[in-house]
Image 1 (tube, rainbow, N blue to C red):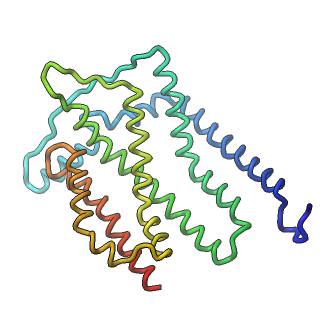
Image 2: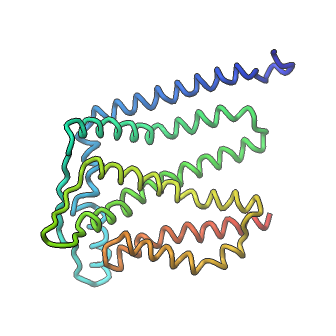
Image 3: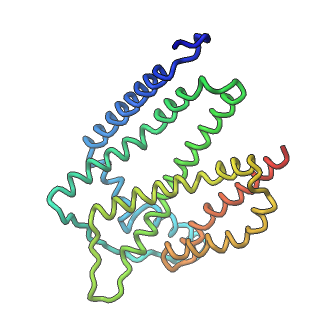
Length: 262
């Protein structure tokens, strides 16, 4: 039955709008995925770059330490990467292209989702929802970049070169590399949503500034320990991982303080 308000849609019409939106999202994502699949050489140079001992992050760390006054250089290393199944390289190429296609299409996906829920929002909610959507996406991209340039290459260097005995050689499968790469990227993208999560919890009066401040030193200790575990045994790289993660927590405290004052 048609509603009295012409601006409202029936349940079936909502499903039709949703179906069209999903088809558009799948279509745009597929186009990007196919494009990524075609430019294979460039894409895989970028994906495999963090596994190189001359990755830009290591050179950057060396320059910082040398600027401070110490003659420091990372040791060169090499980790063999293999494919153990006949179709593994081809299938990994496909799945990786889809993942990157989704990542590139994410602004459009966010736009489509926003358009879908827009009619249900009032004027004030629309104004703030745009800002929240932009912040969420920005934080996600920052988390992805943090993973690519800092967390993943340092973790790969440590885990890929770690061995229990000289007789044991490390050979990493391509699927293992990609699985770790994608998983860590998504995890960091979610971790960087912490300020948004804290904002929502503070709005709901579940947490407050006093609670977050009370456990500040414990959180710093936990972050430091985690950073020390995933990084090589040198202070500089541990600091480079600890600072941005702890800065997120401090940012969350500031957000909770602003919310509690409202």
